[in-house]
Image (cartoon, rainbow, N blue to C red; front, side, top):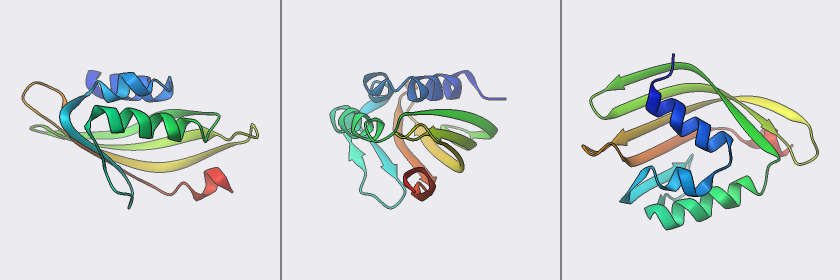
Length: 119
């Protein structure tokens, strides 16, 4: 079962609310997708996430497992993407984040293979 914060994160992501996602980060927080350079700060994060949303038709996260230790969270997911052509594909994903004492995200890393989404 997902924690309240994890549910909030993926509800915002699935709603394609880039501003809402960016608001979860500290001022110098970072978000990295796989091997790509991190997006740093809420402004870059919002722009990068919004840009990604523009390449897909939609998405939905299903939390399989979640582990928490201090401010660290690891979430194993299945993510169903709707492609721009209307097709759907589900891929495995792992998200890892750290939260500061004020509850906002300092670092967030996402590990997945998006190739099937764009195939």
